[in-house]
Image (cartoon, rainbow, N blue to C red):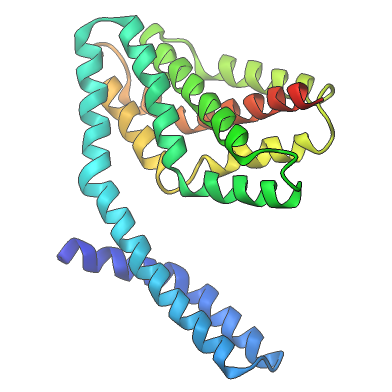
Amino acid sequence: MEELKEMLLENGKAILPIAVLVVVLQLLLKQPGPDVIQFLVGVVLISFGLGLFLLGIKIGLLPLGEMIGSELTQRGSMALLLIFALFFGIAVTVAEPNVRVLANQIDAVSGDVISKNSLIIFVALGVGLSMSVAAGRVVLGIPMKYILIGGYALIFALSAFVPPHFVPISFDSGGITTGPLTVPVLLALGVGLTSTLGGKSSLSDSFGFVALAYIGPILAVMLLGVIYA
């Protein structure tokens, strides 16, 4: 219960400034009273729900990610590590709430031209492949800067060939994967991987997973744009 209280207090502190600003704006614009009350009820529900969500991640998914990462490296199979990283990235992305929100919005705005299911699938594949690359980078000791430079060079090259409306969608798809579920799980996986690799630096190799998780969906959705074109 103490951890839940701490989570609720942290969420309250984070959401309170936004709530105060919105209420002040509604009062200045002379919005009806029921709208303000409805908004405040929503703020309370969001704070409580997000607190439970983050508590579940802390006591469940974070230890799981670290345990899986350390166990996979002890198996000594590079192929097993890459395959698991692929499917782990896909599973986490499909469960990410931000991905579904963006997919539903794009589906509604485009009038079903861009299917929400196809967008979710490509974003998930992008994150999964990025996780395989990130895991392989840790094992092989490849400097992160080379992967980032190559990834962004490929992104800007592809942007010249995809339909114009897919470019902003692609970058938004990368941004929404760095959500409240994906980020802590991927960081935990990275820490678990490097904790059992002798001669590796946990500080430099445990991180960068989120950076690659941002690049993968952008490339995947751009490829989806090439297909739609």
